[in-house]
Length: 562
Image (cartoon, rainbow, N blue to C red; front, side, top):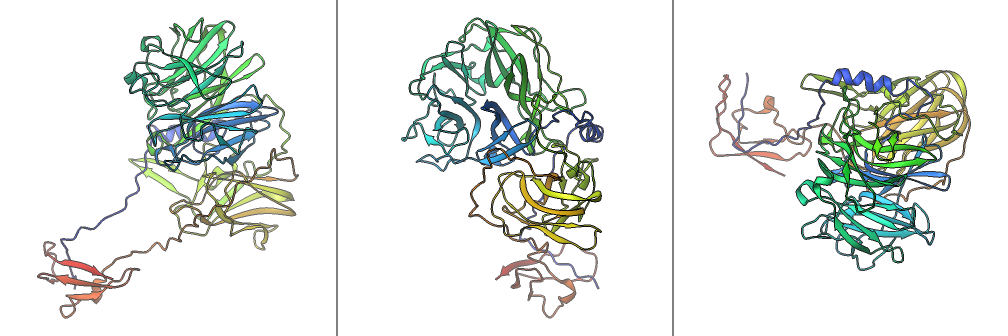
């Protein structure tokens, strides 16, 4: 007997929708294979995670990347910094930045940093929670802790400056050869008449003098992210155009004889754009690293497969070559990146390209396109790929087979989100049957990337078991797991503060409200137990009909009583 129940009360479904790119299967093989064809190259993306609007700087013997933390609502992730000694091995740290008095600071957009004449470091970034403003902070170190430049929260560059309606975002600061510092800012400039430029008061480091508008016709197809540099006696104003959400995003430039212009657009624009096979999709919002006579462009592109409508971006580096002082050659975006410019002191990662297996793998299949977050993605030395579990139930495990028993002293894990903690256990085994604990982080509440665990053992197999995450809905997911026979220096050795949040509730993967039709009869059709995990009862209201035929038009009004 088949029983049919229908109600006028609506049922709500939570649906997970994943975005995909055109020609996914074709692009996938290129992303997976091309990044490491040249073992001596710094592969793209260079950071294991979702970051945008990168500013790269070198202070002392360390490189730093300050960026927008992406893949969270409105790109509102934690204010982190990445640092490296060799441009290859990067470490993440969550900076301590005081919030505004009037609003809990969440947006940390498009940061830039300069070293002042006093030897201190000045950090500037945009925020639109109280108008689109640029705020300033100061510290004795490049990583903080930071203090407000203005205790009363007055912006360094306020909304409506230098003219009414102008949004002050995406500020970049340029130090000229005479020591003067200029700021360039503006976004949605195709709506707002072009970029703005002004001189920073280097005595206060928080006042902009002599602001002017750069007319829109001097920077055609512009959108945001102005970046100034100097080549010879020419001032090169680079910028991003079109839409940051799709394949039209690109980098263009113009040049002038003064920091204020007038600017002449480059004849070979754009110099960086989506390539033919779309392995580099929507590149833009960049900065430039100068190393002697060599230049490198550091920019973001969309992740692959492209998710979150282009709001899960990743940072890349490629060569930037000048034809002459006023002409930049077109950038050739690549997966292999650049040849290292600093010799790395980090020893061989013996898990590189090792065989891997996992408890489950997430399989994305949308509109006929297929992508699998395979376990071997965690051992391919590629920040464009990851292993991800099939769902957010725990535990989930990832096992690496090193091929033979070998000494191990360090294991480093780069989880999907650097600024959220993961709770996990690392184990090791010689035969894959008997396991011992390498590191027990089952109660971990500290975020970081990579997570570093040391112990002197011999093993062939290393198993990572993820037990929980800080945030509800995060999956067990790993960009890379790296294994080393020897210890090595970790620059700065910074550690984040333990979180007071979470951990996430465990997912039971069960229905919270359900009707067991086998236990409903004509006698109890007006009141019966909820078979879902919430418990309680269903009580019928109005006329209830019960039938054994295939008629699906019978009304049933039910309300849940807890």
